[in-house]
Length: 276
Ligand SMILES: C[S@@+](CC[C@H](N)C(=O)[O-])C[C@H]1O[C@@H](n2cnc3c(N)ncnc32)[C@H](O)[C@@H]1O
Image (spheres, rainbow, N blue to C red):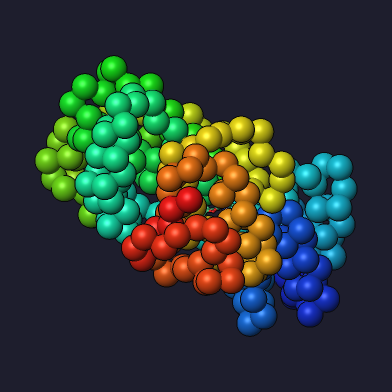
């Protein structure tokens, strides 16, 4: 057992670690975040029994260290999410997008949730679809939910949540789509099978090649591109455009926007919602 860790993060360490993060995931760590990196990664040094950041960097560069790159990502990215986060998109799905699709007579729906974190977003989409489609059994629906983080995907697949992540979920929907286990603060809410069965979770780094061919009716990529630089965002937006069917929608986080320059051929529909 290591008694003490000399976890001083030098400018050089910071530069190397942020370059690594950028190269793997496109996530840019801003200058000024040194303290945060030092404290979060000191936990990794402890877990790995490494004495300092030189040895951590050496470990990351080794064959054994490849898995650690994802553990480092987990420490340095935010996975914050909750059910019905940024509700206007779910109202739009229910009141605009689904009626449009129904009007075509199609019973097929493909949705991609890119950067789904611990699953609250795709489960919310599935609940909204269950509400919108009384005859959902006659529909061919697939929600693909991807994230770079294996630990977030594990959490998503477990589909057990504390009450705190349900603060924006209408009580009637909690009642209908969750099974409560336990009491008080420790109570857990388990997403029911009929909500979960529409979703396929898979690990995918948005910076790499994508195996899916599409076309998708809707792509949710919310509160993910915010961590990327303008060039990376623009490339992603172009790739999303190609994967959407004509008339398909791209929904991004409400604090994000596609500027005229970076919007490509998308049409602006409402805040954080664009149409091909
Ligand atoms: C803040 S969460 C957003 C969750 C959800 N979309 C929402 O808006 O509530 C950002 C997610 O993006 C994921 N992410 C970051 N870089 C990624 C990349 N290069 N490829 C795939 N996912 C990435 C993180 O792992 C994290 O789970």
